[in-house]
Structures are given as structure tokens and as C-alpha cells.
Image (cartoon, rainbow, N blue to C red; front, side):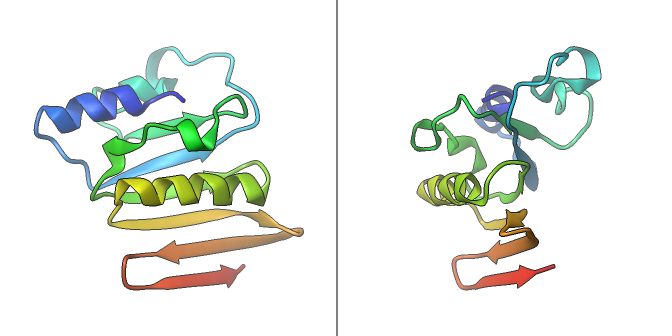
Length: 122
């Protein structure tokens, strides 16, 4: 997982971005230097982002940095992996989660808040 450390540091310094994007990827990108680095996104004035690769175990992800935030979960991998990370997010009390991915060949969007759950096929 890449990008969570800078977000956690910002949170510990009293800053709370309104949202974070989490990207589920098959492979780790080759070049994460410069402005492409999720660890530098806040420092460069961008919204925070976290990359999760196939080597990361969903149940072991330390996502405490998302507490109280809108989380946009984008899956470029299997829907079951997206659901596993979505379930893990629930352990860290986000304010809202919007997840997108592909299930059975169709684009799916899930919107969750503590009060609501909505699934849409796009």
C-alpha cells in the first residue's frame, strides 16, 4: 500500500482532507517519483490517494487514516477484491464510501453511508 503514510501524518498534524481516492491495482506502477507519487499528493496540493496492489492483503490494510472521510474506491481488479477492501474500510469508520468496479462484465457503483446503501449498475 502506498500513500497512506502521508495522509496519516497530515491527520496527526490536525489536517483532515475531505476525501481520499483508493485505487486497487493489479501491479505496482513502475514509476512513482515526482508528482506521480501518492505519498507526495498532499504536499503538492492534490487530493490524497492510496494505491493498493495485489500483494497487499485486504484484512491487513492499515486504513485508520480514512476515519471520518469520504472514500472513493476505484477497482481495476476483481469485484471480489473490491468487496474485500470495502469490508476492511468499514473497520475504520469512514463517513461515506463510493466504490466503482466491474462485476460480471458490467460497471457497478456502490454508495454507502452509515444510514444508506445503494448499488447501481452503470
